[in-house]
Image (cartoon, rainbow, N blue to C red):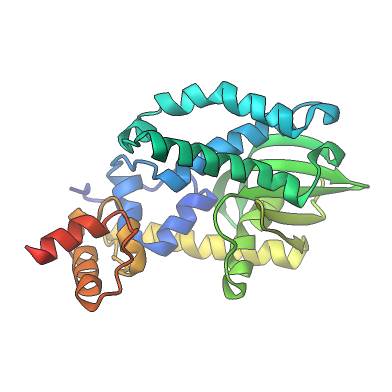
Length: 283
């Protein structure tokens, strides 16, 4: 149960803000009730690739090679196998091999976009903390580079390249990182990039107007979070993503949405919650 007034979070991050916009109910389960949210396979693959790329790009330029990345991946793999979230996947030998291959494809995907040995890396996994439009903001930037006289904010993405209509929204994340760097006294970045590994680089020029717009959207989310916590009202936003929500069994609206989709034949079979819902519908 929620307390008489749900406690406001100490800050927003790009992931927490995005989750609230996606579904306030799911946000409540994670950030108010503090229920554990196990990482799915895609998230674990992405975390593995991010860690290898972080360590690789933190090396002197001459050592940022695929061979070095492969050695680091081999070194880090036992940590992945020991992760409870990975163990919870209960992968067989063939599935575990496919997992490693997906991780390796994401890692090598950086070299399909650029040669990291030619990049002037300023920092990797840099934590930023700032007040943006009055909102306490915290984030971790995958990479900050220098191109000529300018800074560039870069963020890795191991998922699929979004359609054209969603790309501008995704770039808001790196625009917030740029705004946070500027707010902390660091020079204002010149460009912000999303590196969809093995696919394409999305980039945008950093301007005062774009940073203000990103901060304004963050403030809108923060105000909605505040209202939800004060009023104890965390509305569900049923949709296809309910199939990937680990709390769907605790959400009547989400459950009904999945049952409706199952009956209509529009519930993706690969959605983690699909098997449970389909079994219940068939019973």
